[in-house]
Length: 130
Image 1 (spheres, rainbow, N blue to C red):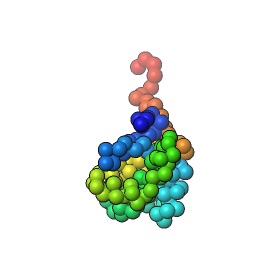
Image 2 (cartoon, rainbow, N blue to C red):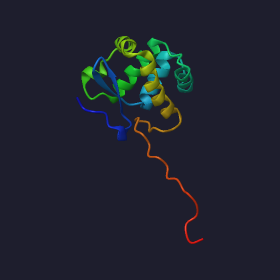
Image 3 (cartoon, rainbow, N blue to C red):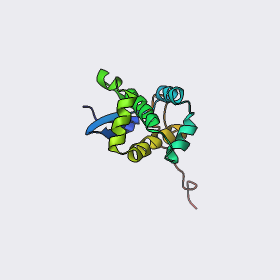
Protein backbone atom coordinates (compact mmCIF):
# COMPACT_ATOMS: atom_id res chain seq x y z
CA UNK A 1 0.00 0.00 0.00
CA UNK A 2 1.27 3.50 -0.83
CA UNK A 3 1.71 5.72 2.22
CA UNK A 4 -0.01 9.08 2.46
CA UNK A 5 2.07 12.04 1.36
CA UNK A 6 1.54 14.89 3.85
CA UNK A 7 3.14 17.37 1.43
CA UNK A 8 0.34 16.67 -1.05
CA UNK A 9 -2.28 17.16 1.64
CA UNK A 10 -2.88 13.49 2.20
CA UNK A 11 -3.58 12.05 5.61
CA UNK A 12 -3.97 8.48 6.77
CA UNK A 13 -6.98 7.07 8.55
CA UNK A 14 -6.37 3.65 10.07
CA UNK A 15 -9.48 1.49 10.41
CA UNK A 16 -9.31 -2.18 11.42
CA UNK A 17 -5.56 -2.15 10.81
CA UNK A 18 -5.90 -0.85 7.24
CA UNK A 19 -4.43 2.54 6.38
CA UNK A 20 -6.68 4.62 4.12
CA UNK A 21 -5.20 7.65 2.38
CA UNK A 22 -7.49 10.71 2.48
CA UNK A 23 -7.43 13.94 0.47
CA UNK A 24 -9.95 16.73 1.11
CA UNK A 25 -10.35 17.80 -2.52
CA UNK A 26 -12.99 20.25 -3.68
CA UNK A 27 -14.69 17.44 -5.60
CA UNK A 28 -14.85 15.36 -2.40
CA UNK A 29 -16.21 18.33 -0.41
CA UNK A 30 -18.94 18.91 -3.01
CA UNK A 31 -19.95 15.24 -2.89
CA UNK A 32 -20.00 15.35 0.93
CA UNK A 33 -22.16 18.50 0.95
CA UNK A 34 -24.58 16.92 -1.51
CA UNK A 35 -24.83 13.60 0.35
CA UNK A 36 -25.11 15.07 3.86
CA UNK A 37 -27.18 18.17 3.05
CA UNK A 38 -24.73 20.31 5.07
CA UNK A 39 -22.36 23.00 3.86
CA UNK A 40 -18.63 22.74 4.55
CA UNK A 41 -18.89 25.27 7.39
CA UNK A 42 -21.84 23.41 8.92
CA UNK A 43 -19.84 20.18 8.78
CA UNK A 44 -16.93 21.87 10.56
CA UNK A 45 -19.27 23.15 13.28
CA UNK A 46 -20.89 19.73 13.67
CA UNK A 47 -17.49 18.08 13.87
CA UNK A 48 -16.25 20.56 16.46
CA UNK A 49 -19.38 19.91 18.53
CA UNK A 50 -18.95 16.11 18.17
CA UNK A 51 -22.36 16.14 16.52
CA UNK A 52 -21.62 14.31 13.25
CA UNK A 53 -23.70 11.14 13.01
CA UNK A 54 -21.95 7.88 12.25
CA UNK A 55 -23.56 8.05 8.80
CA UNK A 56 -21.98 11.49 8.27
CA UNK A 57 -18.62 10.16 9.45
CA UNK A 58 -18.90 7.31 6.93
CA UNK A 59 -19.79 9.69 4.09
CA UNK A 60 -17.01 12.20 4.86
CA UNK A 61 -14.35 9.53 5.32
CA UNK A 62 -15.42 7.57 2.24
CA UNK A 63 -15.29 10.65 0.00
CA UNK A 64 -11.87 11.69 1.35
CA UNK A 65 -10.62 8.11 0.87
CA UNK A 66 -11.93 8.03 -2.72
CA UNK A 67 -10.17 11.33 -3.44
CA UNK A 68 -6.89 9.90 -2.15
CA UNK A 69 -7.28 6.45 -3.72
CA UNK A 70 -4.93 5.04 -6.30
CA UNK A 71 -6.59 1.65 -6.62
CA UNK A 72 -10.07 0.63 -7.73
CA UNK A 73 -10.69 -1.18 -4.45
CA UNK A 74 -10.01 2.00 -2.48
CA UNK A 75 -12.21 4.04 -4.84
CA UNK A 76 -15.00 1.51 -4.22
CA UNK A 77 -15.20 2.04 -0.44
CA UNK A 78 -18.78 2.19 0.81
CA UNK A 79 -19.81 4.84 3.36
CA UNK A 80 -21.80 2.30 5.40
CA UNK A 81 -18.80 0.01 5.75
CA UNK A 82 -16.52 2.92 6.64
CA UNK A 83 -19.09 4.05 9.25
CA UNK A 84 -19.02 0.52 10.75
CA UNK A 85 -15.23 0.59 10.90
CA UNK A 86 -15.24 4.10 12.39
CA UNK A 87 -17.65 2.92 15.07
CA UNK A 88 -15.32 0.05 15.93
CA UNK A 89 -12.25 2.31 15.91
CA UNK A 90 -13.95 4.98 17.98
CA UNK A 91 -16.20 7.61 16.43
CA UNK A 92 -14.67 10.39 18.55
CA UNK A 93 -11.18 9.65 17.23
CA UNK A 94 -12.29 9.40 13.61
CA UNK A 95 -14.50 12.50 13.88
CA UNK A 96 -11.56 14.52 15.22
CA UNK A 97 -9.34 13.49 12.30
CA UNK A 98 -12.05 14.30 9.75
CA UNK A 99 -12.89 17.64 11.39
CA UNK A 100 -9.25 18.73 11.11
CA UNK A 101 -9.34 18.06 7.36
CA UNK A 102 -12.73 19.77 6.94
CA UNK A 103 -11.53 22.83 8.87
CA UNK A 104 -8.31 22.99 6.87
CA UNK A 105 -10.31 23.00 3.64
CA UNK A 106 -12.72 25.63 5.02
CA UNK A 107 -9.95 28.01 6.05
CA UNK A 108 -8.39 27.95 2.57
CA UNK A 109 -5.51 25.65 3.47
CA UNK A 110 -6.06 23.37 0.45
CA UNK A 111 -5.95 23.61 -3.31
CA UNK A 112 -8.96 22.39 -5.29
CA UNK A 113 -7.22 19.03 -5.75
CA UNK A 114 -6.87 18.76 -1.98
CA UNK A 115 -3.16 19.48 -1.75
CA UNK A 116 -1.99 21.33 1.33
CA UNK A 117 -0.99 24.90 0.49
CA UNK A 118 2.43 26.14 1.47
CA UNK A 119 2.47 28.20 4.64
CA UNK A 120 2.73 31.92 4.01
CA UNK A 121 6.06 33.48 4.88
CA UNK A 122 6.01 35.50 8.09
CA UNK A 123 7.81 38.78 8.49
CA UNK A 124 9.31 39.73 11.82
CA UNK A 125 10.09 43.36 11.26
CA UNK A 126 11.85 45.63 8.83
CA UNK A 127 14.96 44.73 6.94
CA UNK A 128 18.15 46.74 7.22
CA UNK A 129 20.10 48.41 9.97
CA UNK A 130 18.37 49.98 12.92
